[in-house]
Figure 1 (cartoon, rainbow, N blue to C red):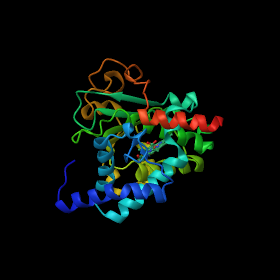
Figure 2 (figure 1 turned 60 degrees about the vertical axis):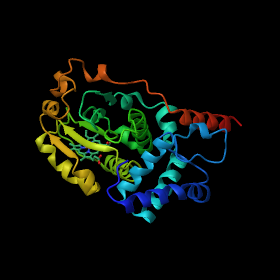
Figure 3 (figure 1 turned 120 degrees about the horizontal axis):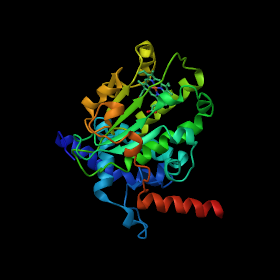
Figure 4 (figure 1 turned 180 degrees about the vertical axis):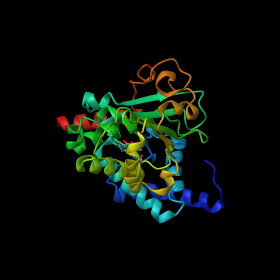
Length: 291
Ligand code: HEM
């Protein structure tokens, strides 16, 4: 962790010190973020799941996202913990079975030789959903699928690597022809954007929108209004999807103009294991459900 000022480091330490009380009093003892235990806790049988370096790196991201403003950080961490307890993103990522039509459009890749913070890439081939408006009718299903994919992508991130703990994301809109954004979809997209902003801060290095037909540039203008300024600065819109290779040189050549002769589907990392703590929590939930 790199602090720009001594005051920032002091705030970080104060946040870490206050976490146990916050978790006990305001979060019903829920102490997990992205599959990691964020405080050692009092239960000795669980302290083995606590990795101080990872926990601190995650807390640091929250501090950085909210400019080391103590009270805001505490509020945001409280919110994320309570949201995670209720929404259960670990279940969405590792337990639930999603609609195959959605699973097909979400892929994860890892390019070890790519520049830092762009080695892990999430791909959303949303152009394939153009005629599948039914998938947005049940917004919760789409949301659980998309959050599940986000959680799984985080397993590819090494939080302890100060210089490489962000990811890139690609939206591929190939095949998007004449199209109207209906209210189901607008609601769903808006909701996902808000969740990413609130509960997954400081994780995105760049977001590429490729194969965006020029006549659909208006969609970008509509959607970007939901996005905060700092996230918006990371967006790159490319009409020609093959130009993506300039930004991610190791991506598939035939589809995106990179160097890899494999297709994106061949590059996809389908099997992703939860963290040990996530496994413990998911097993505990199964036992509680049976009881
Ligand atoms: C975000 C789907 C068309 C620009 C999103 C999101 C979804 C989505 C589900 C939520 C964020 C995420 O999943 O990462 C679709 C579908 C489309 C479509 C199914 C039509 C087939 C477009 C077009 C553009 C566009 C034509 C124009 C560039 C954006 C932008 C965001 C977004 C700027 C915000 C990204 C963020 O905050 O992370 N879209 N979209 N979309 N989309 Fe689309």
